[in-house]
Amino acid sequence: MRSLVRLFVRGCFPLLLFFTLAYAQGTGIPPNESRTIGTKLPDVMLIDSHGKSFNLYSLRGKPIILSPIYTHCSSACPIITDSLKKVVYKLGTPGRDFWVLSFTFDPKDRLEDLRRFQKEHGIDGRGWKVVMAKDSQELFKLTDAIDFRFMSEQNSKDFIHPNLLVFISPEMVVKKYVYGVVFKYEDLKKALDYAEGKEDLLERLRPYLFFVGLLGFGVSSLYLLLKIFKR
Image (cartoon, rainbow, N blue to C red; front, side, top):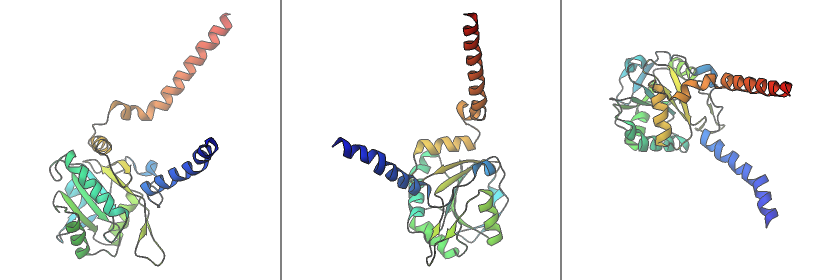
């Protein structure tokens, strides 16, 4: 019995963990955050489900939760949207406190697809908008800015892509990624606070933690050496 448990822990469990994480993050290549975090988004032209064109920068002044999806997705995207819907109204009111953009990265999506997706998921289309880029050039400007890489599956309408949300500051700066298909209130609240500049002390000090640790190690080593030489 013990040998079977040991075999599961050493063999099956790591494999199960791998597939769980792979599903949560998606099958695509995750963004290179070192290239995107702290950078400003381009002022791309978008079209909402009502057919109205608007510039991304017209939403300045409030943080944005950007959800890359495509409307014909039959797996992760609907789960992401429904999970976000369960949490987002606990965070505040879209349109008043922040914006939510379900942004299709499928160049073949059309206005009727946005409307269908919006209706299927009960999205209001005002504070939470379902949008597409005005053209392919604008599409790839935005996906490149968040380093969102996707590719179509062979002989299929589906795409291989990472599963994530992007949190944008009121100044249109990329601040945080949250990965997965099912989201917790605590994780999204923390990410939204961070996008608004309300990050906690640990987040502010995170870039300096390595150097603080290195300094602490150096001081401790010096103290030990002094004690040894005094003997």
